[in-house]
Image (cartoon, rainbow, N blue to C red; front, side):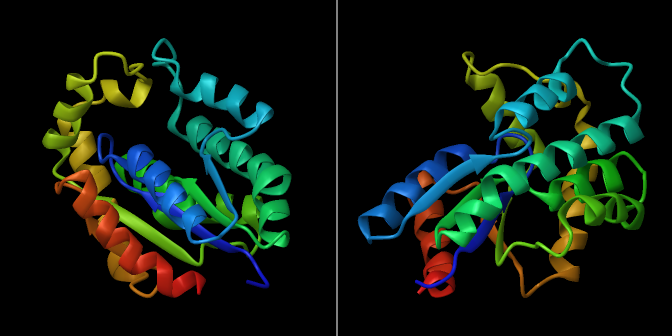
Length: 209
C-alpha cells in the first residue's frame, strides 16, 4: 500500500464503536496492514486535555458554540500531530469519531446549523476528509441502556442529555448518510459484535486493498 487510508467510525452513544474498532485493528494487522487506532476528541496530549473540558459532567453551563469550537480545536491538533503523519507513512488510520460527529451533535442536535459547523471544521481540517466513514446505527434508547449496563464506564456530559437529544443526533446522522452515500456506509450496530465486525470488514477491505 503506497498511501494511507483514513477510516472514521461514527454513531450515537452506546453503539459499540470502541469495541469493534479494536477488533478491526487486530484483524487488519493479521492481514499485514500497519494500523493506527485513535479517537476524537483526544488521541494526543493537547486534544485529551480539551476532551476533559468538553466532557466534564460538571460543565453543564458550556455554550453550544463553545462546545463546537473546542471540538474543532481538538480535531485540528489531533489531525496535524497524529493522523496526517500516519497517513504519510502509509498506515490505515481508524479514528473513533471525526467531523461527522460535530455535524450531527452540534450542527443538528444542538441546532447550530450543519453548514455553520462544517465551516468551523473546514478551517480546522482543510481538505482532509475520510476515505470511508462507518456509521454505527442503533436505537438511542438501546444505546443508552448498553451504557447503563457498563458500570465501569465513566459518565460524561453527553450521557446526561435527555433521550430526545439522542434521537436528534440519530436524525442528524441519517441526514449525513443521505448527503454522502459514497463516503458514509451504514452498519447495523444492534447486531452481535461478531456480526458487526463481519459487516465492517466487508466495507473496509475493498477500500484498503
